[in-house]
Image (cartoon, rainbow, N blue to C red):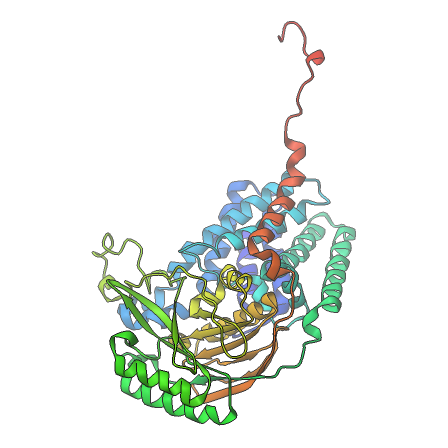
Length: 495
């Protein structure tokens, strides 16, 4: 009961580090509580405590899920947060078992380092793949702290690792009542952060000279899908107002045009002309169809009338696509859920009159590997088009906006973010907001962006960071491998 209580307190502290509470300084204490109960525990006990803590942590931080789809599943809405919590909690169970193994088998000086690597690896594992849910990475909480500079070198996972190092060595110090290793760990993290900060190219940005704008039309989710005419009129009018500042790029949110544009030539032509009249590249969220396949899409209209279509690559599981939908059709309300979209396959990068842009649609912005692929493909500016109206006034919009800050830091690129009801804005490569709109407002966010700055992370990517963490966990365990026996050491009877 004591350990369960400590694990629960750790989970609550980690939850409080995220918006809306936003106490980022609680992360090392929350994770230290988990490492404290894992140290000295059996693998089974550590896994059970990790699962219990994960269930609490994710159920609290995914509370916005009930608001997101509660309209579609009726009375079950408030309980829906338990769904992703049950899916994600096993990753903390695995982290607990790996941490317990590290504490029991590694040299005591490096065991906390191995435990920290194990936790971060599990965070990476739950952030990749078709069913991944990459929200609630601990590194996101530091979007406005000095630790954010680490993301330019090791990504968000690097920040998570640094936080876990502090927590693991802190827990070890309390357990063994010796604080020398903890002091060294603190000094090391401070030194690494200081060096990263001093050497960070984003601290000295070249002048931003390219005017851009994001349009936030503030059409509520409750009647969005039945208000195509309103959306066309509102976004067209607001775009003409934005054109007064002569932007080179104008971004609309995700699926604000709730139809397949290519199936409506008159509407498609209208937006082509709008791009020409404003002399700006217009990025408009809509749908696209190719045979039976339907895509969540962004149309990139050039001022000359040409256009390209980007298809969303990472769909939201159980919303935009539904695994085993036919098999689970007997469950209540399943038929009411969205789904049936097809994922795109191309890491789109599109030229404009100023910078090459990389579109990210909503959920995709939480996946570091997707943005990394586009930056490697030559993208100079990240464009996030999202429909955060799904979140309402919950913590969801704030978490999602925080994630966009880390994508800017990792890639070294400016981010232009257009959200249907907020939070829209322009983020610099150092993660700071150059312009920002609040929630539930009809507004235009305008500002300047510039070329990207180099980052180590944009060259090595998240997978290589994960491999380094795996090495940190495996190398201290090599002493457990049996040594080969020389022939001369084997007696005749043994032969």
